[in-house]
Every structure is written in structure tokens, then in C-alpha cells.
Length: 463
Ligand SMILES: Cc1cc2nc3c(=O)[nH]c(=O)nc-3n(C[C@H](O)[C@H](O)[C@H](O)COP(=O)(O)OP(=O)(O)OC[C@H]3O[C@@H](n4cnc5c(N)ncnc54)[C@H](O)[C@@H]3O)c2cc1C
Image (cartoon, rainbow, N blue to C red):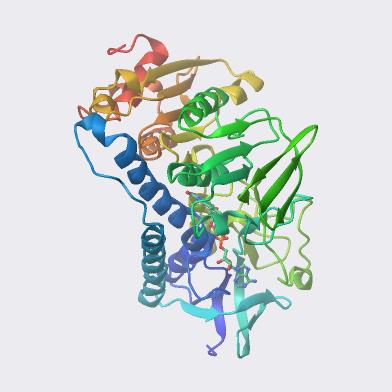
């Protein structure tokens, strides 16, 4: 095979692209992965999941030390914030993980090209690097170019005072007053970070609720907790403009007074990224939302061209992109590959965390599915008491006739880890009785899921 000829060329090295590239190489394909950025890992590792979780952890420790340690009988002197050190730790974690992907590419013999990749007709990819341009010949091409933050008309993003999530991961000082536009998980997580570090945070949301898509009962309870923690919510609020001036920013709101603040974080969603990708050279037309249309096996309308991750339909989540990458290349090599979209968990890493898998109560009601509901509050969990983290609850929703679990929603400590058991059970088609009959270690937070499962068909033991 000529040097620039590959079985598979992957465009983009985010969770979708890099995982697909590694898996394809493990299945015996000769694989290249093209990435514009010097660091591998995509949005998730560079400016998404990982840096946000680092700051959430550090800011949580800071808030605990200031407000919570005394309750445990631990007296500290003055607790001080060293923001540059906190940001350096975040950068170090990101650097270690992106380097790790580089190592995995080497280990699995994935050839990496640094530059902007674009399609140039069937089986052809052109990579424009800093100093040179190369052409690759590919039997199969996988588009995994991801997404970018959505703009909002009237909001003049300057990449400094008025920015997106990437800027909010690196503010050089704690803002006096931060306005977050959008109460989705990115706005809430980053709002929580700066609020814990001392900022006044106001969250403006167009909808009458936070966390659209999550179970509304759980979201309402979370909103009460976040309000107690100091976040100010203004729901049903339409932002019409935002501008940075010399002494701060001004956010205009429909029908009421403008808000003055130091910084604005625009977090109203993300849109697929397909700029200068040469889609027209193979006859692919994005849909009205900008996403690349694909069939059940990730094939686009162009023969030999596939797409996965944020650039196609479905939730914009790292693990969703990964699963699609695996399923897509497995099908290429073995003829089989499948993603179970009914059991993809979603997690918001605030404190407490919010995690969800399957259908919400709102969806089941709308679809007129007869269901039963079991709820267990962390207030009644021995482990939660020992941690001093008793806010929230577990909610299990099961089919009223078959008892099959249709959805699990958790607001509480480490909900993101707890949801894995629910996802596994649902992937195996479990009933609530199946979960309730599994022996859970005591005392653990996982017992709350067992008790909520018990509560679906009868009384829980500890309530
Ligand atoms: C602040 C924030 C926090 C998040 N937290 C979480 C979380 O906790 N959990 C979670 O599951 N998800 C989270 N996400 C979402 C997650 O980052 C995305 O769902 C995930 O990165 C999508 O993976 P992907 O591979 O489709 O695309 P991306 O990760 O966006 O990767 C695409 C890559 O392609 C490259 N690229 C694009 N076009 C080209 C081209 N033409 N040539 C070469 N390279 C190109 C880009 O540079 C990029 O590196 C978060 C996102 C943000 C912004």
C-alpha cells in the first residue's frame, strides 16, 4: 500500500474519532486520524468534559473547606484561593490525558496527521497542515468533526468579557458578577464553579425550567438546592442583547431592566461543526440543524463516508460519540455493530450531581405509557448521612404491566457513578424486582437505588 493510502481515514480526534481510530486499528484496519489541533482528545479532553470536571472538583474542595469542614469538627485558619494554581492543575490534567491519547495512537499504530482535513471527492481527503498539504486515499472515511458553541443573536461575543465555555474554563480572576445565559448542564456546571469560588452568579434561561430534557421533578428539586447554594435563577427570561463596555457588560432582557455584570458566559447549546469540510464534493447536504444525515449504521448519503458524534443526530455526549465510533467500525469490519440509544446516561456534575438514563416521567406521561414509580430519598440513606450529603433522591420508573425499568433519575452524591448500575440493568432488560433482589453492599450510596427499586412495587425497607 502506498504511504498515503488507508483503509480508514478519520476526520477529528475527539472521543468519537480517536476511539473509532483505535478500535479500527485493533480490528486490523490501516488507519489515519486527521486533527487540526496540536492536542488530541477533541472538545471533551481539551475544553469540555475534563477541564470542567477538574474545576468542579477543585472548587468543591474550596467550598467544603470554607463552609463544611467545621461541621465535621475540623477547624482551619483562613482559607485562601490560589486561582493560578487551580488553573495550572487543570491544564496539567488536560495535558496528561491528551498526551495519553497520543501514546494510544502509537501503541495501536494509528497514523496521525496534524492539519485541517477536508473531503475532495470519493475516497480522497486533503490535509492542510501548517507548512504542507498532503492528500490521503481512503477506502472508508469517518467524519467526527464534533461541534462548537451556538451563538445567540444580539450577544456580541468578544472572547474575553463575553465568552463561551472555553473562556469560562480560564477566567484570570473570579468575576464579581457572572451572568450565565442558558441553564443547561454546561451553564450550570461552570456557573457552580465560579459561584463556589466567590462570584455572584445569575443564570438567565428562556424556558420556564432548568436542565431541559432531564426529568422535570428532579430538575425542580435541583433548582431549589442550587438556589440555596447561592445561584440566582431568572427563568422565562429572553436575552435580546449583550455587550461589553469599558467597565463591564450589559445584558439586555426583553420587557425588563438590563443586568450589569463583569463577565457573560453564553451557554445556550452547541451546533455541529462542518466548516470547510468539502461535504459538497461527495454530495452530502447537512440537515436544517446543520447535522450530517446518517442511517442506522452511520452511513451518509455518500458511499464509503460515515459520520458519528456531535456532528450527527442524538445527544451531544462524549460516551455517545464513543459508542457510535465503535459500532461504526465494528460494522465495517465484522458486519455487526449496534448502539442502544435507550440506555445512554446523561450526567450534570454539579453538587449534588444529577444523572439520568432512559425515559423521564414527563415523556412516559406524554406517551401515555402506564408506569409505576419508586422513590428513595438520600435523607434515609445511612451512607449519605455519614458523608453529610443527604440532599436528593433516586427515582425508578417501571412499566406497570411488565415491571421492566424504563427510566432511572438520580439527584444526589456521586449520582454520575450510581447511574451506571441502572444503565447496566436496563441494558439487560431488568425489571425493578431484578434490581431490588441484587445484594448491595452496606453502607453504600448504591443501596438507595435498591430501595427505590423496591418502592416501585411495594414498600421500601428503610422508609
Ligand atoms: C464545557 C463542556 C463540558 C462538557 N462536559 C461533558 C461531560 O461531562 N460529559 C460528556 O459526555 N460530554 C461533555 N461535553 C460534550 C462533549 O465534549 C462532546 O459531546 C464530545 O466531545 C463529542 O465528541 P466528538 O468526537 O463528536 O467531537 P469533538 O470532541 O468536538 O471532536 C472533534 C474534533 O475534530 C476536530 N476537527 C473538526 N473539524 C476538523 C477538520 N476539518 N479537520 C481536522 N480536524 C477537525 C476538532 O478540532 C476536534 O478536536 C462537554 C462539552 C463542553 C463544551
